[in-house]
View 1 (tube, helix red, strand yellow):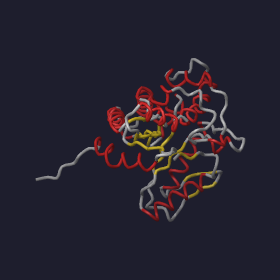
View 2 (cartoon, rainbow, N blue to C red):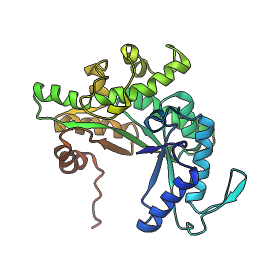
View 3 (cartoon, rainbow, N blue to C red):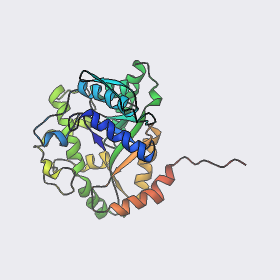
Length: 281
């Protein structure tokens, strides 16, 4: 869902989205962050925020058919004049959230915790307002695993194990924040305290259920960062996120019950929280 400025040349990324828009209409969104698994497995590191900011500008301008300076040259995709691409920024830390508000068309928060969502959304909107932008013009997207259970305690316990990997994945980003700011990082303690027992991360098991390096993630974090439980639990969380200003929820389905979860969302969860438009008399 989220690319980065390091894996591909920015012109390639821009051309990719412009091509998809030309083929299928303006239906694409570019999610982008500093980089995680794609750069770490090749012994790289996340890019700087300055690089991220520059890449957002170059990719957006080129993918929208406009001229932009890149590596000393003035570049444009002359065939992309009708392409329209928004840049949504994935962020957790205070400086990345500020950048999102300053230049992003959208904000991607990869966890479904309500208190953290409220804090990050407020930070993005405050930065947008300070930059002279419309805070409400930034699309808010929450992305997290969802697992629909049968409502029993056994089902809940099983579902938690299927998505516990997500707490480990988020922990990589949190570890970067703690490394930069220390234990007194200017972010909610709910986001940082749980990684104290974290002991490394194996990217060979990245995003996989049952991986061996996420035992440090407690049930409380699984329940807060993910959505696990019967349909009613999912409906309530969707409504709570919607009330906070979330526009879109992206379901991560890296578990053993993809079809059932997706069907439940399509048939029960989303219809329950969707805005209903009545036909005029």
